[in-house]
Length: 135
Length: 135
DNA sequence: CTTGACCTTGGACTATACTCCACCCTTTAT
DNA sequence: ATAAAGGGTGGAGTATAGTCCAAGGTCAAG
Image (tube, rainbow over all chains, first blue to last red; front, side, top):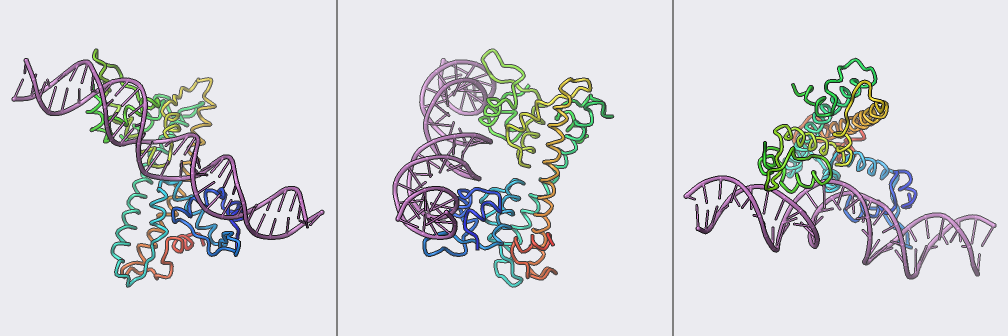
């Protein structure tokens, strides 16, 4: 069992952030001490790190909340809805992966045009480099 | 030459957003009419779509501003700085691509555990599915 | 038995990225 | 000639995601 400060430092967030996430339903302490201290389980570290990853790639806390709420069972009557939600998120992720690849290639082109690299410096801005990708 | 409404609808943003981006240095109309109307060039559509892509994958408007400002010339004295900035962004993008792949795989596992899919429904939450990836 | 580190809640404050509104001017269509 | 559609500015308001602070309770060490 971890107190809030311990989880915070393990997960690399502030105690305030943990309480903020709790207020928004992203995490709940397993229990409280008699004096009201929050007690988290060790696996909550992974929960936080998932939240951070998902945030980094552009999901909002609200969407992350929905992702964390998901529970699949093969015979669930709401299964169709869950599948639809997840498949939709997969599409979103695929789209973002594509955008990201384009931007990455442009950055590479740009880096390569620089400091004696072998790319001609004709595509000397990010938009120029991006348009090379799009041809 | 496009007036603000035309650019807005081509680019899929609001006029207010364009003015907001202008205030923050992300785009400037090529010129103004005598009456003060903003006139944009057609290529600004691509500029906006770059901004939207970059935003979608997690760059802030501030970072996007910096990316758009970049100009590489092989003999630029500030070339080293530019290269460093760009190479740093490439790393960030690579990291995000990794996070995204992990999340995508988890979503797939989850989707597959659903509705008679062939994955066992034992990893029935996103965290469960994610932990399969991390083994 | 007190000091310092840690915890509680509630509420105010901040940054980012818009979005909306009022009020007024310009352009276009009838 | 006039109305509707569109544009300009300035400023207020909103949503998201925290961050900080005050006032107070808890707990382990010396």
